Image 1 (tube, rainbow, N blue to C red):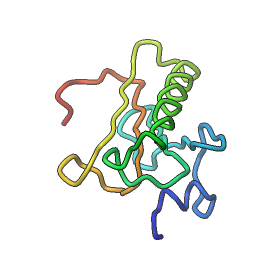
Image 2 (spheres, rainbow, N blue to C red):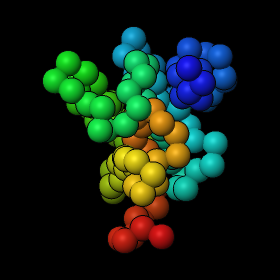
Image 3 (cartoon, rainbow, N blue to C red):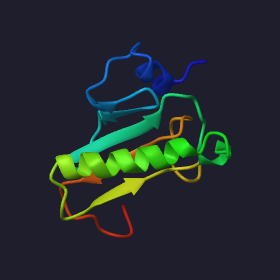
Length: 112
């Protein structure tokens, strides 16, 4: 498998880690779109939200709990955004389930 996020999770590609445990990895985005821009991924390969099942979906709850913990630690008390892009038309560019934690500035809607 030639998945860049799997390689990051395995340590084959270096990343600036924000959090890691046996299930997930959170690391800083190389092209940040906000002062705080962290990607949260499951270590197990799940291509997108469309591949979530009863058996693997608990990792999403764990990711959201970790995102809230990181947001608090990073002083995002005024708010933050969590984004998941699903599929080509949804803007997904890496075929590995991931969530963007964005904060440190006012988020407008709709996004640009």
